[in-house]
Image (cartoon, rainbow, N blue to C red):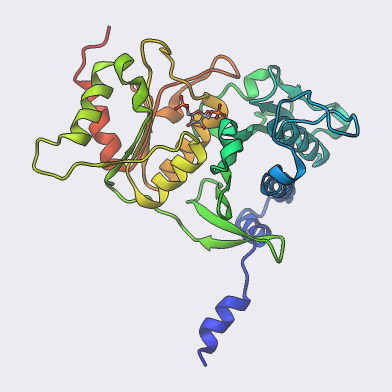
Length: 340
Ligand code: AFP
């Protein structure tokens, strides 16, 4: 009997234990971050359970529909948003919340305030819910600058100032990927325990990949560098093999695959959407933070994505992220174009 392997299987590193271990490296820490993260994890467990039984519970459908009891049914993304907002406020550790679902930021009332700002998309990829494709929650965490009245400036900060970022993917298993600025770790929900267990320690993205991921239906509106890059993926001129195309249309799933297998994910600007589609605060920044922490890169077409300073909470930006070498190639193509 392999007692060493057995001990490994019985010594479970839960996400809470992992964050507590991290906390012990900061003697000044009071455990606030651990508490906040526990509330985010709770929200993810709720959404995971709701996504799993969505068909059964008739959660899928238009907001405002009524069920047989005459109660208003909520769309899964609306419901997820409510769960996260309530979980985050009740943590007592947040002061500003920015959600994809809410036009305005939520300022937590003074009696329940803490020092963290959370930017999040409670259920990204929701147009995929009805066909059972993987969807996810994305979040980023900032701390307020000093002891002052919180203001929007506390969240309109470059992504490099985030303290932590992550996502939870509701797929064939429920996977929580987290970085607190010290590498990237992946945890998988063990439904029998109700706990996220460390399954992907110190994730590193391959330096170069052979997959590109983009909505090619937008090709007629792309700019020159994006069009040239995708052409090179399909018809390489340096003797290398063509890359494979994989595109789910659900950012969490596309980025998760990119992180594990390598390659590049692109949501570029185009003639119809000069700023691309994806939102800076709760899509571009958290995913760029994770990519950099895993050894990859994230680029907007003009600059390092994490250097961007958003002016509005729902601002959009083009994004190219993934394996270091693949992003380097697209950077070179943009650098070759004289700026206008
Ligand atoms: P939905 O939430 O409307 O499904 O949008 C998902 C998303 O924001 C992101 O998860 C995808 O990467 C991207 O949009 C897909 O956009 P296209 O449908 O334009 O390819």
